[in-house]
Image (cartoon, rainbow, N blue to C red):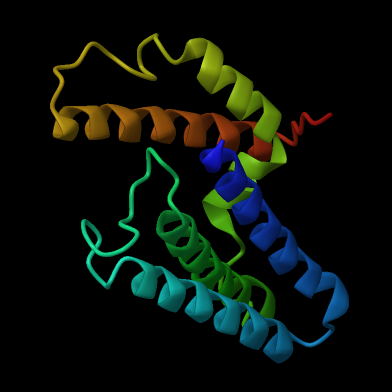
Length: 160
């Protein structure tokens, strides 16, 4: 039950980040609000875990979705949003590259990755080591990135 509350809370924080776009017209104000929210989340996460991920009053535990884990991820998400928004929308130095390709037909990417996950080249039989699993997952993501790029470059956009 507790995990549900914290997952609802991180969705709420994402909703608040999205509302900034609708309620704030200027780039600088948006970036300031997101930076402040991200810094606050990171500080709260640090205080909750005693600035030590494995110990402290509320340690950062992904499997339990502890409040410190949720706040850490929300803070990182806000800061990533600040960097991407500044580079794409404010400074115009980046066009969104891989995110644009994956996002234009995201339902195809999601369903395809779920259905084809057990098959090569999206994954292959691995040992139980984290390094091998990481490399397998990187190959799978790169394959879906290529599929997303090919769909996007041919003007094929599939959405609901």
